[in-house]
Length: 156
Image (cartoon, rainbow, N blue to C red; front, side):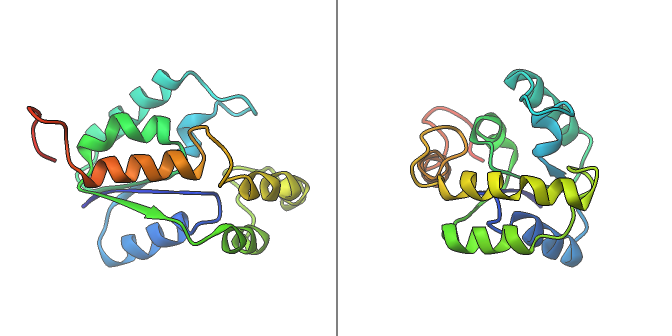
């Protein structure tokens, strides 16, 4: 099982990955861990892609989850399945509001709570963003995966 879970923040990627791992053992990578270097700025894209490729090469079965279409696109050929979670913005907002403390992302529950308004504003912009995090880019990536690899390349 080599699966990528793609979707907005609060879409249910982490919850689904935990459910999948409970059914069948697999390593799990959150792209948040490779997209940032401990600060608010994203690291260089190629560094993130290279780190994900190294991680994949060390796993026999894996799940990768994230909202980073620019990191996911170059690794699609290594996955067996791409799952696009799109439950709608209001569901994502509700999930973000009920999210437990994420110590891997925030030093305290208070710090996470202080960031909640920014996160909800970001989640609400999903349908209008034209960047690698937005619905239009996620949909295009998912549709390209469904249509298969370009002619003349190896099948997935």
